[in-house]
Length: 473
Image (cartoon, rainbow, N blue to C red; front, side, top):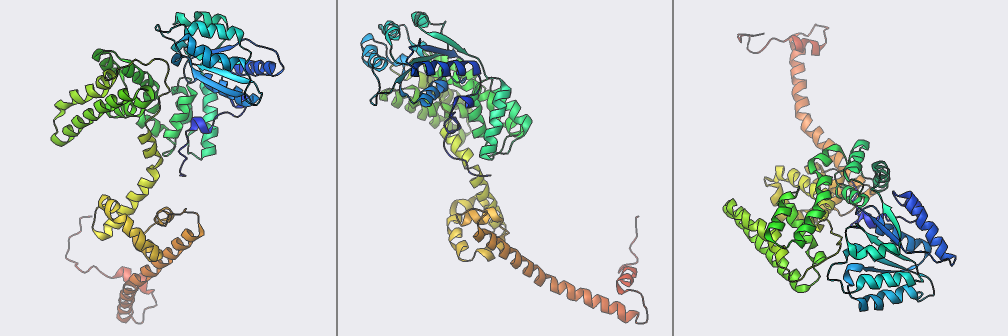
């Protein structure tokens, strides 16, 4: 299995043209026509994309700017709640051309993040949309649940993004697996596509997380990966926005992932949700106190501490903030788990080498990997053929110890030489046995010198050494 890059698949396989955009083909065509009209000097109404997360709203907006060569001016509407800030930042962007004279695409992401404490921001956005001389796209998850964006709806062309058909997702996932050389089963990819519930972004993260092991029914079933990830985003959001212990506790109880994994999700996304330094510091302080209790549970085997660690991890983090945060946040899969997944092949090689050497050096594989592997590499480089023969290393293990790739000529030559050494050693060990066999045959020949019968056939007729032994069968 090749080692996959650290780059997220959502970035690596970002569509280059409209033909690569998955799902909502009618909307993609409409946006392409809309952009072409702007390029021909025909002013168009702003577009408002709305629908479930992961259906490609922001992706299509970014693709449009890239396809038409427009400069992108992107901001989150929930972060600009005053009339003055909106007019100063957005107003200039929608009226003026870019530095090089090209048109500019203004993207107002998550426009439904406007809150009740908004001070004229929604009204300022509505006015700017009417007067815009540059293309404008807005995105939202729900355009009817917040009355603040009702006047914004009236100024835009509404385009609803439906959940992507699982067959389209499965087709693209197979293509990516082939490009990345990830082993997969057809039915397993289909199940993964169905389980993502039309969220293609999450499906991409799924196959990247499973890339080290390959995608089959066993890995999907054992990890339970898609159902957990589908719900964890909502759980994390509810925990971070909880205003009472009861709200945070309820969100934690509804989580379908283990509390240990939930803690890793919270740790990864604290700096993404909280933007104020004091809130980030307080949140990590609560998380560290939760970890202290987890350590006491392991050391003392007293699981009564679990109620403290669980509450500190969720409610403690949520209520440690001094400020409220609104709007949509792009939560990320825990980085530590991605690193472990990417390094799984390396860890397996270390374990295999440790087990092979441990058998002959009378040491544990973990001890060898932790303390002796770094020194073993030095000795191995001086005489790789004999070491490979002695410990029965394969090409991958030899390549790892030499910090190279298994397919290199150097590794192949060492492996072939090691096989020759093992054959020679086997032949040397075999010689005494062959000598004994020759002596037995000589005895048979001496006992029947005039017989023309084959000595080997005579050997089969020799009676047992203990004829008095009773036969049961």
